[in-house]
Image (cartoon, rainbow, N blue to C red):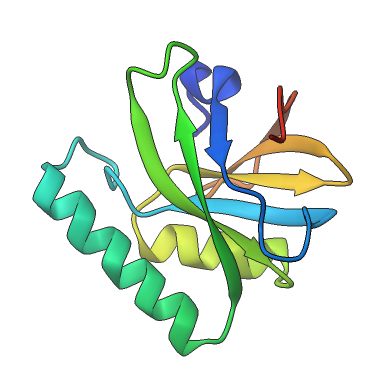
Length: 125
């Protein structure tokens, strides 16, 4: 399922150590198909980070936000894995959707149906 709010998401991130990857996915563990408490979101994020480190998936911090920055969900940019693998991770963490950045264009991809919709990444600073 792709909610309309996903199509206006903006991102806050620090430049990864080397440079911006051409292709990557953005996955969060926050609010798994429901609004979770701060403590639950922190625990889920810690678990996701542990999984990425265990599986040696290159990652960097990136936060998805509402356009007014009032709602923010810390997530991870995943580098060097397939979209299918990223969707599996999103499903494991109860996510409706994730973001897939391909050659600078950003798509919202449903973790349930694989439907995708394009959006524009406003800034990469």
